Image 1 (spheres, rainbow, N blue to C red):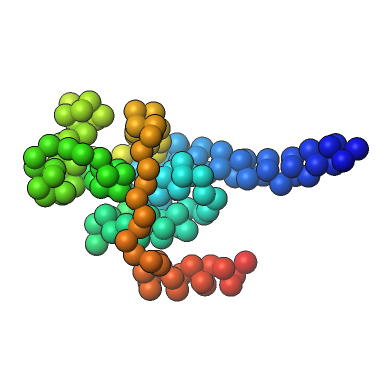
Image 2 (cartoon, one colour):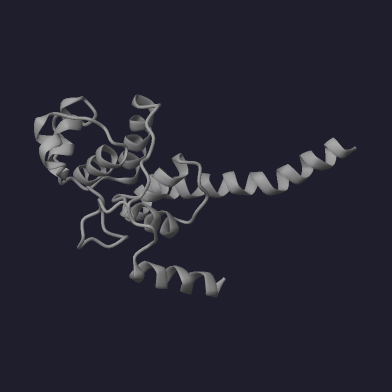
Length: 170
């Protein structure tokens, strides 16, 4: 009897979490241009954390690799994805990547390793499908990578105010 009750409780609490993730990923897949919110959500979901897309963005922003002028809903590019993955998963690279740690050389390094197609432009805005495929491909090719600790201890003040406002409305 206890096992039956435990199974039912598990179904009521666990299944909605996975369905929320599945519906969010389905929404991302349908987008013509994925945003920083979408990319951040995929990274955080892969890390096993449960969050909203905005909470995921504020967590990923703490790494300091997103361009300064871009907003959470700005379209994400192949160059930005490459830079985030190379820098925050501490992947080694060639001489220019090691010397500059710039987004352009992160993209060039990943392109040279066959991650991006030869015809891919570094400033190409990725669709939702391309973003999901890129994140999946990265973790398939690098199963043992570990995300480094974010250098910033907390979300930026701009985002902290928005997060707190969002929590008060619930």
